[in-house]
Length: 365
Image 1 (cartoon, rainbow, N blue to C red):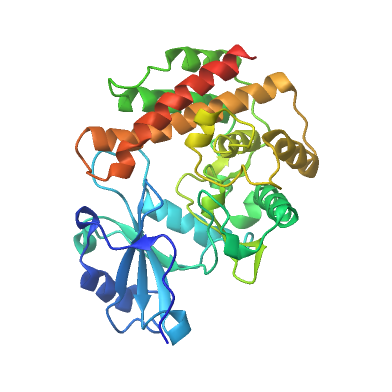
Image 2: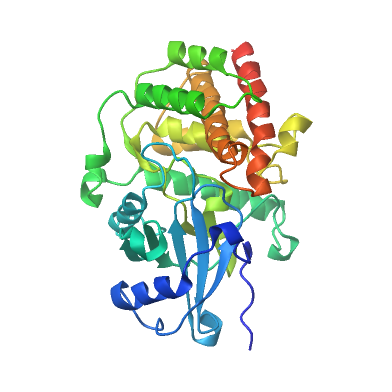
Protein backbone atom coordinates (compact mmCIF):
# COMPACT_ATOMS: atom_id res chain seq x y z
CA UNK A 1 0.00 0.00 0.00
CA UNK A 2 1.38 3.43 -0.96
CA UNK A 3 0.70 6.41 1.30
CA UNK A 4 -1.31 9.12 -0.44
CA UNK A 5 0.60 12.33 -1.16
CA UNK A 6 0.05 15.26 1.16
CA UNK A 7 -1.64 18.21 -0.54
CA UNK A 8 0.61 21.23 -0.87
CA UNK A 9 3.83 19.26 -0.37
CA UNK A 10 6.25 19.27 -3.32
CA UNK A 11 9.92 18.68 -4.02
CA UNK A 12 12.22 20.84 -1.90
CA UNK A 13 13.47 23.94 -3.74
CA UNK A 14 17.27 23.90 -4.14
CA UNK A 15 17.69 27.19 -2.28
CA UNK A 16 15.58 25.87 0.63
CA UNK A 17 17.31 22.49 0.99
CA UNK A 18 18.88 21.41 4.29
CA UNK A 19 20.93 18.52 5.65
CA UNK A 20 18.23 15.91 6.14
CA UNK A 21 20.48 13.42 7.89
CA UNK A 22 21.60 16.09 10.36
CA UNK A 23 17.97 16.86 11.18
CA UNK A 24 17.16 13.15 11.49
CA UNK A 25 20.12 12.58 13.79
CA UNK A 26 19.13 15.49 16.00
CA UNK A 27 15.58 14.16 16.27
CA UNK A 28 16.78 10.67 17.21
CA UNK A 29 18.63 12.24 20.15
CA UNK A 30 16.25 15.03 21.17
CA UNK A 31 12.63 14.39 20.17
CA UNK A 32 10.09 14.17 22.97
CA UNK A 33 8.92 10.92 21.36
CA UNK A 34 11.52 9.06 19.28
CA UNK A 35 9.25 6.20 18.18
CA UNK A 36 9.66 5.48 14.48
CA UNK A 37 12.50 7.97 14.00
CA UNK A 38 15.37 5.50 13.56
CA UNK A 39 15.55 5.99 9.77
CA UNK A 40 16.13 8.98 7.48
CA UNK A 41 12.82 10.55 6.40
CA UNK A 42 11.65 11.44 2.94
CA UNK A 43 11.33 15.23 2.80
CA UNK A 44 8.88 17.43 0.90
CA UNK A 45 8.37 21.17 1.14
CA UNK A 46 5.02 22.84 1.75
CA UNK A 47 4.69 25.44 -0.99
CA UNK A 48 1.62 27.37 0.23
CA UNK A 49 3.32 29.71 2.71
CA UNK A 50 5.68 32.57 2.05
CA UNK A 51 7.13 33.29 5.50
CA UNK A 52 8.78 30.52 7.49
CA UNK A 53 9.93 27.48 5.51
CA UNK A 54 7.88 24.39 6.30
CA UNK A 55 8.69 20.78 5.41
CA UNK A 56 7.05 17.36 5.68
CA UNK A 57 9.29 14.67 7.19
CA UNK A 58 7.78 11.30 6.27
CA UNK A 59 9.10 8.27 8.15
CA UNK A 60 8.37 4.69 7.12
CA UNK A 61 5.91 5.57 4.37
CA UNK A 62 3.71 7.69 6.63
CA UNK A 63 0.93 6.82 9.09
CA UNK A 64 -1.05 4.63 6.68
CA UNK A 65 1.95 2.30 6.40
CA UNK A 66 2.77 2.29 10.10
CA UNK A 67 5.16 5.21 9.85
CA UNK A 68 5.04 8.76 11.03
CA UNK A 69 4.67 12.28 9.60
CA UNK A 70 6.40 15.23 11.23
CA UNK A 71 6.58 18.86 10.17
CA UNK A 72 9.76 20.94 10.44
CA UNK A 73 9.73 24.75 10.45
CA UNK A 74 12.70 27.08 10.10
CA UNK A 75 13.25 30.72 9.11
CA UNK A 76 13.74 31.90 5.53
CA UNK A 77 17.11 33.17 4.36
CA UNK A 78 17.76 36.87 3.84
CA UNK A 79 16.71 40.01 5.70
CA UNK A 80 14.13 39.50 8.42
CA UNK A 81 12.08 41.96 10.45
CA UNK A 82 13.25 42.31 14.04
CA UNK A 83 11.50 39.76 16.23
CA UNK A 84 10.15 37.80 13.26
CA UNK A 85 10.71 34.08 12.64
CA UNK A 86 11.42 33.29 16.30
CA UNK A 87 11.25 29.52 16.32
CA UNK A 88 11.65 29.10 20.07
CA UNK A 89 8.81 31.51 20.79
CA UNK A 90 6.51 29.79 18.28
CA UNK A 91 7.36 26.35 19.68
CA UNK A 92 7.01 27.33 23.33
CA UNK A 93 3.72 29.20 22.82
CA UNK A 94 2.09 26.15 21.23
CA UNK A 95 3.44 23.82 23.89
CA UNK A 96 1.99 26.06 26.62
CA UNK A 97 -1.33 26.56 24.83
CA UNK A 98 -2.08 22.88 24.13
CA UNK A 99 -3.87 22.07 27.43
CA UNK A 100 -6.21 25.06 27.03
CA UNK A 101 -6.64 25.00 23.26
CA UNK A 102 -6.04 21.46 21.97
CA UNK A 103 -6.20 22.48 18.31
CA UNK A 104 -2.49 23.35 18.31
CA UNK A 105 -0.13 20.69 16.89
CA UNK A 106 1.85 18.51 19.30
CA UNK A 107 5.43 19.76 19.68
CA UNK A 108 8.25 17.27 19.13
CA UNK A 109 11.34 19.41 19.70
CA UNK A 110 13.09 22.75 19.33
CA UNK A 111 16.71 23.15 18.21
CA UNK A 112 18.50 26.43 18.91
CA UNK A 113 21.88 25.15 17.75
CA UNK A 114 22.29 26.76 14.32
CA UNK A 115 25.23 24.45 13.57
CA UNK A 116 22.77 21.60 12.92
CA UNK A 117 20.89 23.10 9.93
CA UNK A 118 22.28 26.62 9.64
CA UNK A 119 19.34 28.09 11.55
CA UNK A 120 17.18 27.33 14.54
CA UNK A 121 14.17 25.10 13.85
CA UNK A 122 11.40 23.20 15.53
CA UNK A 123 9.49 20.01 14.75
CA UNK A 124 5.88 19.06 15.43
CA UNK A 125 3.50 16.24 14.67
CA UNK A 126 1.59 16.68 11.42
CA UNK A 127 -2.14 17.31 11.97
CA UNK A 128 -3.91 15.07 9.46
CA UNK A 129 -6.78 16.59 7.54
CA UNK A 130 -7.78 18.95 4.77
CA UNK A 131 -6.40 22.48 4.41
CA UNK A 132 -8.40 24.74 2.12
CA UNK A 133 -6.62 26.93 -0.41
CA UNK A 134 -8.32 29.11 -3.04
CA UNK A 135 -11.33 26.86 -3.50
CA UNK A 136 -13.35 24.21 -1.68
CA UNK A 137 -12.50 20.87 -3.36
CA UNK A 138 -15.53 19.20 -4.92
CA UNK A 139 -14.62 15.84 -3.41
CA UNK A 140 -15.27 17.21 0.09
CA UNK A 141 -18.96 16.99 -0.73
CA UNK A 142 -19.88 20.28 0.89
CA UNK A 143 -23.02 22.00 -0.39
CA UNK A 144 -23.90 25.58 0.56
CA UNK A 145 -25.33 24.44 3.90
CA UNK A 146 -22.15 22.50 4.68
CA UNK A 147 -19.98 25.47 3.71
CA UNK A 148 -22.08 27.66 6.00
CA UNK A 149 -21.57 25.24 8.89
CA UNK A 150 -17.83 25.19 8.25
CA UNK A 151 -17.69 28.98 8.13
CA UNK A 152 -19.57 29.35 11.40
CA UNK A 153 -17.27 26.76 12.97
CA UNK A 154 -14.23 28.74 11.83
CA UNK A 155 -15.57 31.92 13.48
CA UNK A 156 -16.38 29.98 16.65
CA UNK A 157 -12.81 28.62 16.68
CA UNK A 158 -11.47 32.18 16.80
CA UNK A 159 -13.95 32.96 19.59
CA UNK A 160 -12.69 29.92 21.54
CA UNK A 161 -9.09 31.05 21.12
CA UNK A 162 -9.94 34.54 22.39
CA UNK A 163 -11.68 33.00 25.39
CA UNK A 164 -8.52 31.16 26.56
CA UNK A 165 -7.61 31.99 30.16
CA UNK A 166 -4.16 33.58 29.79
CA UNK A 167 -3.15 33.01 33.39
CA UNK A 168 -4.14 29.34 33.32
CA UNK A 169 -2.27 28.83 30.04
CA UNK A 170 0.85 30.51 31.40
CA UNK A 171 0.80 33.08 28.61
CA UNK A 172 -0.08 36.25 30.50
CA UNK A 173 3.57 37.33 30.33
CA UNK A 174 3.10 38.00 26.61
CA UNK A 175 0.86 40.95 27.49
CA UNK A 176 2.80 44.22 27.27
CA UNK A 177 -0.08 46.18 28.75
CA UNK A 178 -2.16 49.03 27.40
CA UNK A 179 -1.18 50.53 24.08
CA UNK A 180 -1.41 47.39 21.93
CA UNK A 181 -3.30 49.22 19.17
CA UNK A 182 -0.76 52.06 19.18
CA UNK A 183 2.19 49.66 19.15
CA UNK A 184 0.72 47.73 16.25
CA UNK A 185 0.12 50.87 14.18
CA UNK A 186 3.59 52.20 14.92
CA UNK A 187 5.24 48.83 14.41
CA UNK A 188 3.67 48.07 11.04
CA UNK A 189 4.29 51.65 9.90
CA UNK A 190 7.99 51.20 10.65
CA UNK A 191 8.11 47.76 9.01
CA UNK A 192 6.44 48.98 5.84
CA UNK A 193 8.75 51.96 5.49
CA UNK A 194 11.82 49.77 5.99
CA UNK A 195 10.66 47.18 3.45
CA UNK A 196 9.25 49.57 0.86
CA UNK A 197 10.68 49.31 -2.65
CA UNK A 198 10.45 51.96 -5.35
CA UNK A 199 7.85 50.04 -7.37
CA UNK A 200 5.03 50.21 -4.78
CA UNK A 201 3.14 53.10 -3.15
CA UNK A 202 4.34 54.78 0.03
CA UNK A 203 0.98 54.34 1.91
CA UNK A 204 1.79 57.46 3.91
CA UNK A 205 -1.81 58.73 3.77
CA UNK A 206 -3.07 55.42 5.15
CA UNK A 207 -0.50 55.40 7.94
CA UNK A 208 -1.42 58.96 8.92
CA UNK A 209 -5.13 58.07 9.01
CA UNK A 210 -4.49 55.05 11.22
CA UNK A 211 -2.38 57.11 13.62
CA UNK A 212 -5.18 59.67 13.91
CA UNK A 213 -8.14 57.29 14.29
CA UNK A 214 -6.85 54.50 16.55
CA UNK A 215 -9.24 53.51 19.36
CA UNK A 216 -8.39 52.53 22.91
CA UNK A 217 -7.57 48.86 23.50
CA UNK A 218 -10.30 46.38 24.29
CA UNK A 219 -9.49 43.87 27.09
CA UNK A 220 -6.60 41.75 25.89
CA UNK A 221 -6.79 38.13 24.72
CA UNK A 222 -4.48 35.66 23.01
CA UNK A 223 -4.50 36.72 19.35
CA UNK A 224 -3.40 34.45 16.52
CA UNK A 225 -2.63 37.30 14.09
CA UNK A 226 -2.84 35.12 10.98
CA UNK A 227 -6.20 33.41 11.38
CA UNK A 228 -7.47 32.24 7.98
CA UNK A 229 -8.72 29.11 6.27
CA UNK A 230 -5.35 27.92 5.01
CA UNK A 231 -4.15 27.83 8.61
CA UNK A 232 -7.03 25.59 9.67
CA UNK A 233 -7.00 21.78 9.37
CA UNK A 234 -10.39 20.15 8.76
CA UNK A 235 -11.26 16.67 10.05
CA UNK A 236 -10.79 13.90 7.43
CA UNK A 237 -14.21 12.46 8.30
CA UNK A 238 -16.07 15.76 8.68
CA UNK A 239 -14.80 18.83 6.77
CA UNK A 240 -17.08 21.12 8.78
CA UNK A 241 -15.04 20.37 11.93
CA UNK A 242 -11.71 22.10 12.69
CA UNK A 243 -9.06 19.77 14.18
CA UNK A 244 -6.01 22.00 13.96
CA UNK A 245 -4.89 25.62 13.86
CA UNK A 246 -1.45 26.21 12.33
CA UNK A 247 1.16 28.97 11.95
CA UNK A 248 1.53 30.65 15.35
CA UNK A 249 4.50 32.79 14.33
CA UNK A 250 2.69 36.10 14.94
CA UNK A 251 0.59 35.10 17.96
CA UNK A 252 0.69 37.37 21.00
CA UNK A 253 -1.62 39.00 23.55
CA UNK A 254 -3.60 42.03 22.48
CA UNK A 255 -6.87 43.58 21.28
CA UNK A 256 -9.28 40.92 19.93
CA UNK A 257 -10.80 43.18 17.25
CA UNK A 258 -7.33 43.78 15.81
CA UNK A 259 -7.13 40.01 15.31
CA UNK A 260 -10.57 39.89 13.72
CA UNK A 261 -9.81 42.84 11.45
CA UNK A 262 -6.56 41.20 10.34
CA UNK A 263 -8.38 37.92 9.62
CA UNK A 264 -11.01 39.70 7.53
CA UNK A 265 -8.34 41.42 5.42
CA UNK A 266 -8.11 38.07 3.60
CA UNK A 267 -11.90 37.69 3.36
CA UNK A 268 -12.90 38.20 -0.27
CA UNK A 269 -16.65 37.76 -0.78
CA UNK A 270 -18.52 36.98 -3.99
CA UNK A 271 -19.77 40.54 -4.62
CA UNK A 272 -16.37 42.20 -4.20
CA UNK A 273 -14.55 44.12 -6.91
CA UNK A 274 -13.03 41.79 -9.57
CA UNK A 275 -9.55 43.07 -8.65
CA UNK A 276 -10.10 41.86 -5.08
CA UNK A 277 -11.41 38.52 -6.31
CA UNK A 278 -8.31 38.17 -8.51
CA UNK A 279 -5.95 38.11 -5.50
CA UNK A 280 -8.18 35.85 -3.42
CA UNK A 281 -6.21 33.30 -1.36
CA UNK A 282 -9.06 31.42 0.34
CA UNK A 283 -12.56 30.22 -0.63
CA UNK A 284 -14.54 32.89 1.22
CA UNK A 285 -16.50 33.68 -1.98
CA UNK A 286 -18.08 30.20 -1.99
CA UNK A 287 -21.90 29.96 -1.70
CA UNK A 288 -22.73 29.44 1.97
CA UNK A 289 -19.87 31.54 3.34
CA UNK A 290 -20.75 34.39 5.66
CA UNK A 291 -20.09 37.93 4.49
CA UNK A 292 -17.54 40.03 6.36
CA UNK A 293 -20.39 41.85 8.11
CA UNK A 294 -21.95 38.55 9.17
CA UNK A 295 -18.62 37.30 10.53
CA UNK A 296 -18.29 40.45 12.64
CA UNK A 297 -21.88 40.12 13.87
CA UNK A 298 -21.43 36.46 14.87
CA UNK A 299 -18.12 37.13 16.58
CA UNK A 300 -19.35 40.14 18.56
CA UNK A 301 -22.49 38.30 19.69
CA UNK A 302 -20.50 35.27 20.84
CA UNK A 303 -18.11 37.35 22.92
CA UNK A 304 -20.61 39.90 24.18
CA UNK A 305 -18.85 42.81 22.51
CA UNK A 306 -20.14 45.81 20.62
CA UNK A 307 -18.68 48.35 18.23
CA UNK A 308 -19.78 51.13 15.91
CA UNK A 309 -19.37 51.28 12.12
CA UNK A 310 -16.88 54.13 12.57
CA UNK A 311 -14.80 52.18 15.07
CA UNK A 312 -14.94 49.01 12.97
CA UNK A 313 -13.64 50.96 9.96
CA UNK A 314 -10.35 51.44 11.80
CA UNK A 315 -9.89 47.68 12.26
CA UNK A 316 -10.79 47.08 8.63
CA UNK A 317 -8.26 49.63 7.34
CA UNK A 318 -5.61 48.39 9.75
CA UNK A 319 -6.13 44.78 8.61
CA UNK A 320 -5.64 45.74 4.96
CA UNK A 321 -2.61 47.90 5.76
CA UNK A 322 -1.00 45.21 7.91
CA UNK A 323 -1.52 42.66 5.15
CA UNK A 324 0.16 45.07 2.74
CA UNK A 325 3.08 45.25 5.16
CA UNK A 326 3.34 41.45 5.34
CA UNK A 327 3.17 41.17 1.54
CA UNK A 328 5.81 43.88 1.11
CA UNK A 329 8.21 42.19 3.51
CA UNK A 330 7.85 39.01 1.44
CA UNK A 331 8.22 40.86 -1.86
CA UNK A 332 11.29 42.71 -0.58
CA UNK A 333 13.22 39.44 -0.35
CA UNK A 334 12.47 38.77 -4.04
CA UNK A 335 13.22 42.35 -5.09
CA UNK A 336 16.56 42.26 -3.24
CA UNK A 337 17.55 38.97 -4.87
CA UNK A 338 17.43 37.01 -1.61
CA UNK A 339 15.15 34.42 -3.22
CA UNK A 340 14.26 33.43 -6.77
CA UNK A 341 10.90 31.95 -5.77
CA UNK A 342 8.41 33.48 -8.25
CA UNK A 343 5.63 33.27 -5.66
CA UNK A 344 7.43 35.98 -3.69
CA UNK A 345 7.63 38.19 -6.78
CA UNK A 346 3.87 38.09 -7.20
CA UNK A 347 3.33 39.87 -3.88
CA UNK A 348 4.09 43.25 -5.48
CA UNK A 349 0.66 43.30 -7.10
CA UNK A 350 -0.93 42.35 -3.78
CA UNK A 351 0.72 45.38 -2.14
CA UNK A 352 -0.45 47.66 -4.94
CA UNK A 353 -4.03 46.43 -4.63
CA UNK A 354 -4.09 46.74 -0.85
CA UNK A 355 -2.81 50.31 -1.17
CA UNK A 356 -5.87 51.11 -3.30
CA UNK A 357 -8.18 49.21 -0.95
CA UNK A 358 -7.00 51.16 2.09
CA UNK A 359 -7.59 54.42 0.23
CA UNK A 360 -11.10 53.32 -0.76
CA UNK A 361 -12.01 52.26 2.78
CA UNK A 362 -10.81 55.55 4.16
CA UNK A 363 -12.67 57.54 1.50
CA UNK A 364 -15.89 55.70 2.44
CA UNK A 365 -15.48 56.45 6.16
